[in-house]
Image 1: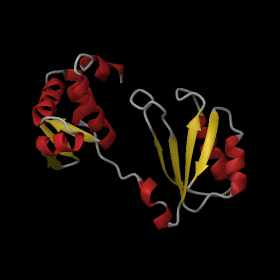
Image 2: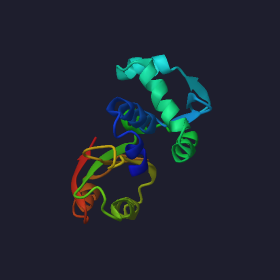
Image 3: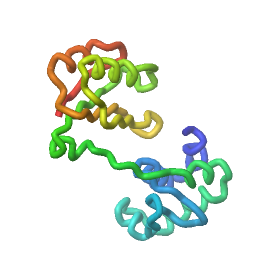
Length: 165
């Protein structure tokens, strides 16, 4: 991800636009912005971010003028994130804060603990430590997580804290 930051190091507002593209899975193809196959308006994106539409356009141009950025951004896809609706789906949701967001194996160890209790995982989302100050791991499970599973996860190497919703 350092390549992306490098291209926008002198343009903090464009960097904000690009971060939004990455967080929401917006792709850039042929000078246009897409949410999967739906074309998005630079003006609307500008309003959401409280930036001028020309800044959005400039970010798109920078992406299009770089082969490596164009390759990355042309293949992005938006994905549903069930965090806000987990309760409505009678699912479990835990948020894990790592000791070190670059630590290796945290997701694997957490998934193993959950599966050891016979609970199916529906979704895992991790925030990118390159673009988020305090990245977290979110795990949505088929059913609510029992307290003993949470206690076991808290004991895992690399886990600073666990929040259950």
